[in-house]
Each structure stands twice: as structure tokens, then as C-alpha cells.
Length: 362
Image (cartoon, rainbow, N blue to C red; front, side):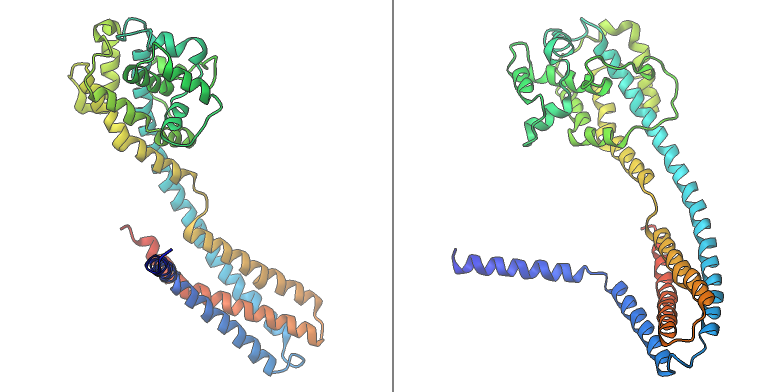
């Protein structure tokens, strides 16, 4: 290794350390240092009065009074925030239901496109090859990730055999596999019944976040959109005459801007692009939001309430019941008092910042 290369590596390490140092939560660290300093100061002041002489009973009573009020305020505020969070999540849940319904409509379309024979240009390369025989358990997720990464599924050799099969056609077979993987659970050889794909009613459920993550990881919608964009004559749309109105109605329910258009590669490509570029990512963000439990300010408030109840209510109450006149009892009371001083100081110093962060939308 040359001197220049060593110098570049050292320079890069220093730069990374500087960036990491810069990203530290310095304001939070400063607040913690102030609170610790205050706690130590209170402890030293009590110690200067001599633990044997200061009135522990009065100190514990004051701690109970102050922390009782402090905890009550925090609990009231917490419950108001929980109510607000539930209302906000309800709106997110409604949005997730709406987008999930669009996904279901799209899957209904794909179900019609993959149900019948003589719809595809080559049934040998699609339905006969992928829906029947030993390849019927291959899922697009495993197929796609095994081709673009080091991921090796359990049926890796079977996937390689599919790619080398005489009837396999890169465009048509890949497109069909992507479609049918969105319609059915390919890992289940018996294909569980999914009644929502055979009707046109609205659902109130949402999709599992793990399923959405898999769709995003393997770019399944992007793959379908890509092959529709090539304008190959993979499908005979005239063979779908009995289901054409059903498909067009489902497309119009996804987005009204597609009303009145003819069923074609371009129409299906445009609809698919809506999912790959917007709907699926939006659904994933909504599901992540719904999956979150207690976070941010709510979490901090719960921690503060817990510490306040332990050190400001339960511990002082227990010590009041003991009421000893020893040095070590006074020492423990001094520690409890100093912890409470630091806790209240932390809340006072951090609360304005936390509220400001919560109110910012951008």
C-alpha cells in the first residue's frame, strides 16, 4: 500500500469520525449534563446540612406532593396524546384500506388474465409450464431475487431448471409468473381459496406488511409494467370478451382517469406503473405507521411517568412507612431527593423542544 493510499484511508476515517461526532445529539447531552449537575448539587447541599439533622419526614412528604401533581399532569397529557394518536392512526388505517382495495382490484384483474387457456400467446410457456407440474411452487420473489442477488431459496435448482426449460420464454414466462404470484400463494401447492378475487365487493382489511415488503424487494409490479411496456403480443384480449367489462370496471375503480379506455397493453402498463411508482410505496409507509407502537414524545412521557412514580411516589411512600433516624436512612432520602430534582429539571428543559418537534410538519 502506497503512502497516498494510506493517507486517503486515514483522511476518510477522520472524516467519518467527524461526521459521527457532528451527528451526536448535543442538545440532549447538554440537558442530561445539566440535570446530573443539579442532582449532584442537591445531594451535596443536603449532605452539607448533615444527614443526621435534616428533616427526612418533611422532605419525603414534599416529594410525594410534588411528584403526585407532576405525575398527574403527565398522565393527563399522555392520555390526551394517546387519544390524538389513535385518531391520527384511524385516518392512516382508512388510507391503508383504500390503497389495499386498489391492490385487490389489480389482483382481480391479474386473476382474470391468468385463469383461462388460449388467452396467452403460448400456453406452453405460461399456464402449462408454470401452473402445473413440478414448477407450480416457484414464486416470483424467489425467482427474481435469485437472479439479481446472492439469495438462494430452497428450490434454487428447480428455478434454474425452469430457466433452462425448452418452453421457457424470458418475457412471456416471467410476466406470467409475476402475475400469478400476485394472485396466488405459490408456496402452497394447493393454492388456498381467495374469495375476494372472484367478486367485485369492497373489503375493509389491509395487506400484511411482510407481503408488501416482498413485493417491493422483488420489484414485482415494476417487472409486470416493464413487459407490458415492450408492447409484445403476449395476450389475446379478444379471448377475454366475457370478462372484459369486469376488468375495465376494476381498472376504473383503481383510478377514474382510466374510464372509457380500451383494454390493451398500454392501459395495463399505465395502471401497473401507478402501483410501482406510488400506491405500493404509499401502502408500505401507511403499514409501517400502523405497526409503530409507543414512540417519540409518548415514549419519553411514559419513561418520565414511570421514573416519577418509582422514585417520587412509591419510594418516598415506602420510606415514610419506615421512618428511621439513622445516617443511612437520611443518605437514601438525599439520593431520592436529588434524583427527583434532576428528573423534574429534565422535563422542564426538554419539554419545549419536544413539543416544537411534534408540531413541525416539514
